[in-house]
Image (cartoon, rainbow, N blue to C red; front, side, top):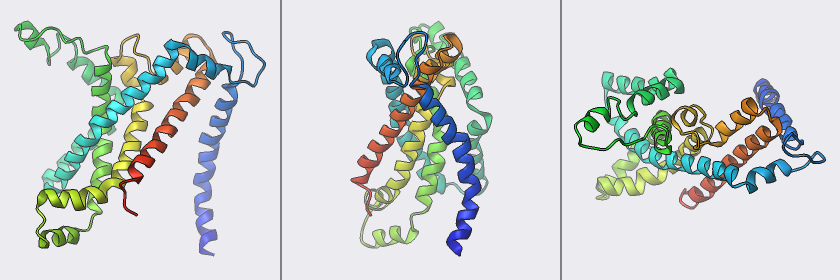
Length: 277
């Protein structure tokens, strides 16, 4: 009886996922197997995928997307972990203000974040302009590069990383730290033998979230990257709006989804060696 009632409660959500995610995904997958103005073949076929993966230009786009996503994840996870460990130390109003400051970039949206970096990163901007005019540094040329994309993506995904890791750290029972202290463990030993092992499932979840957000990011590569620094998201936009090539856009979308799924599988396997059952 209880199982049947639970299934009824889940039915509307499952139905919405199927209608608004499952069906469009099937349509996109079928469209990716169709011919187009560039490639003439008898559909259905995988020629669009061969075209994207065998042409050096498009293959570099796939590699660049993977590289930028991994760099974002590598920088965001340690920064988020340190901040998540510091949050419980804050008390009262200061803690509430810190939480509000973390959620502000999420509430403001990625476009506002990008506009902020577009104002800060130019050679004549408030961040580097005074140093360049004083002759202390040469113009860094960060805007329009992969560095700008990574900086912006790290800043945007950091609140998600911090809040997810903070939730994982709060679930660790406090009596475990007391037991470790009673056995003579210091701060570093408590972290290595209590905090880190028990928070690894949260680190895994955060890694998947951060990588997925970075891989599917469009605004940062579009506005902060150079014309040659296309990622799969901006490539899809070019196929849809620039050349009106829906089959290649669909194939690029499936490649992006496949890359994310493979990365998630690898993350689960890597973390599975260290997560205790």
